[in-house]
Length: 164
Image 1 (cartoon, helix red, strand yellow):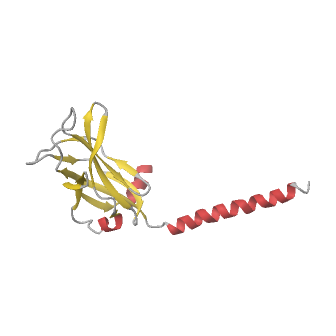
Image 2 (image 1 turned 90 degrees about the horizontal axis):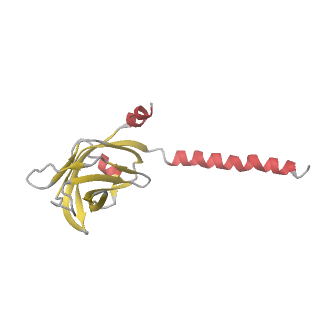
Image 3 (image 1 turned 30 degrees about the vertical axis):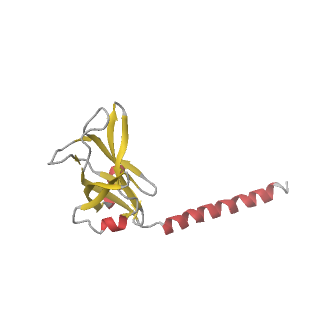
């Protein structure tokens, strides 16, 4: 019976550090924001990839999240351009870095990355431009090959409204 008593004493001790470490995590990461990206437009896109032409989607990758747009078609504006009407909302820390990737459909169910931004774009820096369109250079094979523009804003209520 004396063996059972120490194990009962150890149990609460083990749980207390777990709870305090999660409290520490909350206090270390308070700048988590809900962010919305709208009016997305990508230029410098190829006329055709594989068997298909003009079907694209955008994926936004952050430190601990990945969000994807719906598929869209060309909106030719003197060059091959894609425009997304839907918005992309995600939660991230202000210190997060993000990368935007453009995928093109190349056959029936296959898409491939054709362009992407550098992955060192700070979310905090992008949010400083909340009142203007943000433009980032798209790279194809490591070389400048187009641009992606969008509006970005903080959206504190977006997550809570979506959950309600």
